[in-house]
Image 1 (cartoon, one colour):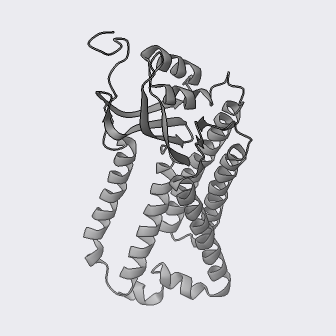
Image 2 (image 1 turned 180 degrees about the horizontal axis):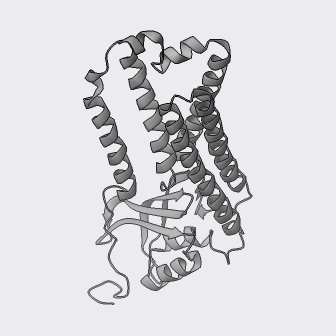
Image 3 (image 1 turned 90 degrees about the horizontal axis):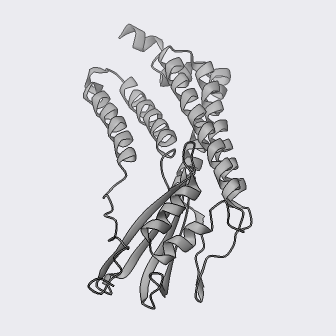
Length: 289
């Protein structure tokens, strides 16, 4: 012991206040939206409202498809427990333990309740990646060497390749395929925007349908891993259970939105093409203006 604490345990990691990748993506898309809003008064007639709606919906779909690639809340769960804090210590702490599963890895959160206990600040957020170029087992071993708190190591061990739970391979492969489907969906979204800007409405609708299909396929890939049998994550009398997170439901809503918009464009093009041209400001009155 050194001044009443184990010297090989570092202090709690300082958590950055927000996800920088998500902040950059949101900033870029909001900047684009602001730029188009500035030029909005230059559009005359009733086409201004349709143009603004197309702009907001298009940027929203693109921002969601790109952002959920990097989020870590496709599957989340929290539990309050009284558990041991460190190895070789009998100290018990009251903590909130969170598990956040994304396409690229697992985040384990440990937050004291209250934060300051046993002369320490208990506020950890550790990421264990399994994406391409990352080694989950190595990250777990580094956590052991750093002496991370026992609850974090216990949860992270459940997803290692050596764990008897055997969920590492399913989640890793499902995350890779879901990520690939979302990157393809982002590409088809860009193509649909290009086609709509060139007034090729029917093929733009087809690309929106393809975008929706790819988004829904990504959800299907994650769904297969989510429904594999898991080992219980037990902390005394309570267990940590997870459910679909915000990113999953937001991706589902975006996929259904792309599906409905694509179908609406194709149906209007067949039944009432004049109304479709009106929505995209291609009617005769707009040309005269």
